[in-house]
Image (cartoon, rainbow, N blue to C red; front, side):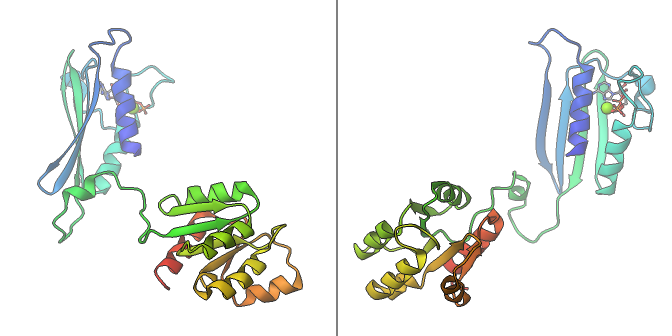
Length: 246
Ligand SMILES: Nc1ncnc2c1ncn2[C@@H]1O[C@H](COP(=O)(O)OP(=O)(O)OP(=O)(O)O)[C@@H](O)[C@H]1O
Ligand SMILES: [Mg+2]
């Protein structure tokens, strides 16, 4: 990342202000055999041939004091070389400059080498579940829904309605349920679900907010729960573990 930032800043600094139509900084990527090549091109001033051999030297700069320290390209060169890559330059005075970063593609016996160069997709949860979230604090419901956005998440703010849905035959892979709610608590919902359909009751995970009654503490000993506030990674891991039956 630092390498590309340096190169793009250099490119921008090589272009004089004005003439916006003609000015351009391009970034191209391609696969060249076992190497990924990323090129940053600009339509700036170009580099005079007599100094092009020195631009990768530390502290070599043509910029005013305070503008450049001359370390940018030296650092880029070092980083790319450390990764077994190559940083090269082509430049034409008055026309522009192209810096080319060639990096070895990770060795793999996988046929989809090109796919590995694509920007990595957001982490996809292994299994998508239909999940019911029950919490009287609507903020909890909306944030859980956002964290678990790759799932089919339904949010309710009271346990009675959740019970009604289950009684009506709605099925969920998982019920994330607050423990302490005014109308009907998570424990009461659990008890009712045991009567109408133990399968649903067994799919409950309780979200707890700290202070428990002794009854609640005992209830939780044998049941899966997550303490609020939780971080998104922990929640997603817990959900995934349940969905895959672990
Ligand atoms: N895209 C470019 N077009 C024209 N000249 C360039 C370009 N990139 C680098 N140069 C020349 O190479 C010199 C060295 O670049 P380098 O990034 O190492 O240092 P700098 O940009 O001067 O300072 P720093 O990056 O430390 O702020 C620059 O001063 C400039 O003369
Ligand atoms: Mg620089």
